[in-house]
Image (tube, rainbow, N blue to C red; front, side):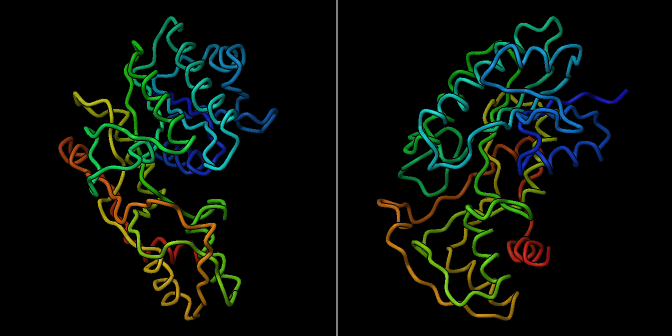
Length: 290
């Protein structure tokens, strides 16, 4: 009998790829969405405990992967807190009340919880210093989760992308400008190095974390390799054969932005787990051609 996995936010960017990967890997995937009467999905509003209880009724999932969240950082801070913190608390409370508890629950947090650090290579044992409302909400979620009696793993993904990600995110924005053969693009700082990994790698790591045996509860998901935005534009010019004029928009430039922020992947490696390996040019080519 295949293992049951309950995924919140399964119709989002990550949820789409994760559901497909787990189904191909032989899991029985129960996909939850906040959209009512969506074919192939169970309705689940994590801000409503009764909705969660109904969604979980008779399912008895062996595993839960909690992706549902407000992920667009500039969103309303109150709404971010309601969904990312309150919604996560609701889900964990409902899971704790189940007669048969899931074997493991994975919560999708974010590398943004690290905030400003003296170190350029970010390891899980650093004290978080979240700055944005989004980052603060994810850290609050982590703190709540670590008090739970459930077997919980907290994943802190660094930036990742892929086909289908909204163009409000940096890499899809750049790729779309080249697809549409636009002559100019407005960007912020070009030199700070960040990770830009593949969603296809990230979902493989989530699956491995379902079964990982480790004393650690928190894992970075990343590659340990960073690129500047200027590098991304240069790669896209090589892939597309087109050039583009970069206009620096002061509104896109963040104050006190760290020059390098990349992940320490030691915990993944120590557990013998997969880490993000796909070359950035292959990711960009995949997005450009699809």
